[in-house]
Each structure stands twice: as C-alpha cells, then as structure tokens.
Length: 450
Ligand SMILES: Cc1cc2nc3c(=O)[nH]c(=O)nc-3n(C[C@H](O)[C@H](O)[C@H](O)COP(=O)(O)OP(=O)(O)OC[C@H]3O[C@@H](n4cnc5c(N)ncnc54)[C@H](O)[C@@H]3O)c2cc1C
Image 1 (cartoon, rainbow, N blue to C red):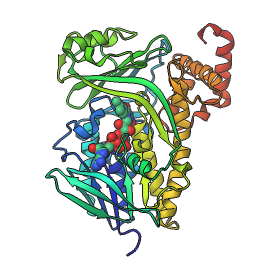
Image 2: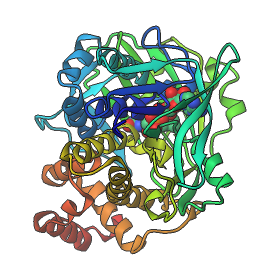
Image 3: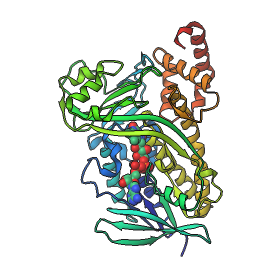
Image 4: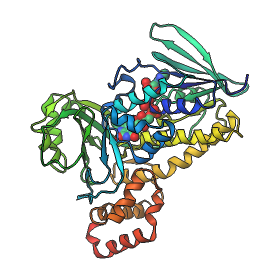
C-alpha cells in the first residue's frame, strides 16, 4: 500500500473542507468525519456556532478560495452573496476617525458564514474521491507507541455505535476545542503555546433594514478606541437582503445574561457603541433572528512546529493550531493560506507524507507569526490583557496608531494598510519609505494624536 492511499480529516468546517480539496489531488481516498448533520442549506449549525456572527472574507482568503475552487467567487454571488467595492462601500470608524473612502478597484464578498460554508460544501460534493461521513464524532486518536505514529481514529455515530478507522494520514481540523489536546495530555507531550486572555464576547442578530436613499455603505465598522472604549460593532449586508449586526466587547465588558433578555436588550447594547450609527439603523429595522452570544476568553497559538517528539501521521490545521482574535476577520483566510501551503508541499512530489507533515507545521508557523504579532500589538492596548507581549510593543503600537490615523486622510497609507489587513502584503510593507515618511511627518506635526 502506498502511503497516499487514505487520508482522514477530523472536522468538516472551513479548514476541514479546504484540506479535503487539497488532499483529494494526492490521496486515493479522503474521508471527512463531521459530528454535525449534513447542512440542508445556508443555515447555522451546532458544531460551528461562531457562524451566527459576522464572518468577513479577506482578499487573501478570497484569492485562495479561487485557487482551490475555481469559479467559487462567482458562485457565491450567484447564490446571493453581495459583491462590494472594498474601500468605497466600507465605512470604517477606527481609533476615533473615519477611514478615507475611495474606489480602490478591489472587491470583497459579503455573506454569512453558513452561506459561504454551504457553497463550499456543494463544491466538495463534486469531488469523486472525497466522502463526508456526518454524525461521526471522533472520540480518540489511535497511537502506536513503538513507532510514535497516529494510525487511526475511534468514532461514535449518532446511533451510538462505535468504529475504528485507519488511514495513512490523520488531519485534525476539529477547530478551537481540538480533539488532539487529549492525546497530547496522554502522551505527556508539552506543546509550547502562546496565549493571551482577552475576555472577548460576541453578540449578533440579523435584521432587515428599511429601504433608504441615503445609505451609501454596504458594511460599517465602529471599532472601539482602546484602552478606554471596549465595545465595538459592525453592521453588514449579507445574502437575502439581510443585515447581520455584530457587537463585540473586550475585557469582559459585555454580560451575556443582560443581552439575551429580549430584543430590546440588543438595542440597549448597540447604544453603548462609540457612535450611534448602528442604533440609528436599527430603530426601524425588522428583527429576523434570536440574539446569539459567543465568548472568546482567550486566543492561543500552539507551536506544533516546536515539538520534537510530535507523532507521525498527524497533521493539524486551522483553529486547532491557532485561534486568533476574530475581530480582525482573519481565521478563515489563515485556514485558506494554510491549505494552499499544504497544496504546494504535496505538489512538489519530492516529499513523502511524513516530510510533508513536518514541513507543513514549520511553514504555517512562519505564516502565522507576523499575523499573531500584528493582532497582539492591538490586543495589548488593553492593560487587562495577559500573555507574552510582542517585542518592541510600544514602538509598534505607536507606529500602527499613526497608520490608523493617517488612513483617514492619506489614500496611499490606507491602501497599504488595507493590503496588510487583508493579508495580501506583510506588515513590514508598512515600513516602506513613502509610508514611513508620512508617519514621521504626522508624528512631528500631530504629536497630540499619539
Ligand atoms: C465569534 C467568531 C467570529 C469570527 N469571525 C471571523 C471572520 O470575520 N472572518 C474569518 O475569516 N474568521 C472568523 N472567525 C474564525 C473562523 O470561524 C475560523 O477560523 C474558521 O472557521 C476555521 O476554523 P476551523 O475549520 O479550524 O474550525 P471550525 O470552523 O470551528 O470547524 C471545526 C469542525 O470540526 C467539527 N468537530 C469538532 N470536533 C469534532 C470531533 N471530535 N469529531 C468530528 N467533528 C468534529 C465541528 O463540528 C466543526 O464542523 C471567527 C471566529 C469566531 C469565534
């Protein structure tokens, strides 16, 4: 048996589906084991409750989706997703100023996460050597101690029966509550983990807004200005002429019990935003859903790449490796970039599965590192955040604040910042001469902003 006979993927979320697409090119057979029922449409599901909340797809994610599923952007749109101009149709209040809006010739697709995932699912179904087994919950990983190899999984199905399945490669794409934690504990394997306590709470609800002749945006972001403001919000158009409103609170500033009492409690929460734009839209809006709450007490990045005795035959991807602060809208795009990395390693053809596994964990650490650093630089503006601080934090925070403020008036700076935020350019691109010059001039003449 060649070692590319069968791959099993634990979890059929975003990372699981992306991985299945990639592995289908080089494995004879790919099986996804998903604990949830099959999606019957673009409807939120139990296993991925974060799907009730705004899920932005960044340019890097959009590009990667096209690489892996050619034509999917067009399908998103024909299924009802909204195609917008990324810089003209986005109204963004950030660090106390509105970003400069202009026609930047780049587009963004707005849709709910269930809508995105359901469209992906239709593409996965078309791949002949990928099978998804729904209502299959993986209970544990099977480990051969002598070889230090993961060779299979034990699953239980919804009718209570148990089975074991073996494969050449097992992929953990089971999300933030990753199934492999239990295995690491059992093997006494310490995974060096970067962690920060952020006390973040998400609260969301869908609405239908009354028609308006003056509404000139498709998505509006009202970010809190840290450290004093802790609550922010977004209102975004999605499919079916609906809007999703997501309110976020850092540092345990939102009490779940208060916001789920009734429809009015959501409106009361919206009134606590730094600007009244969102509440003004909601006063005459029709409520279309219950209020959903999702808590992210901490974010973490497991340094799988640093573990010496990491078992063979196991690859970890998506939120199972790194749950980043979701406010920056990067999680799905990181999963896409990871999947494309895996594709490149497999396409090479020179590496066997074990070498791919090792190289993959190293490569994705390089990919995550600058993003993690960028996010933590912002999260650490709140004094209550705990965890390892990034090096040069104060200067990084000073510099990025200048970038945020300049994005209100300088198209040049905002365009570069948009590319970094969308993960198509590294944060170091903001250190280019032209940008740095503007930052320094701003530093000299507008000291009071810093
Ligand atoms: C509140 C919130 C808002 C977010 N907003 C954004 C955003 O705006 N933009 C963005 O790009 N990202 C966002 N994210 C991040 C995004 O949701 C994830 O990064 C992305 O879904 C990739 O996750 P994943 O596939 O690794 O995990 P998930 O999507 O969580 O999928 C994990 C899957 O594994 C299944 N599973 C779990 N355990 C088992 C088991 N034992 N056996 C079988 N199946 C199992 C689950 O049912 C689920 O289907 C947000 C996250 C949160 C929490």
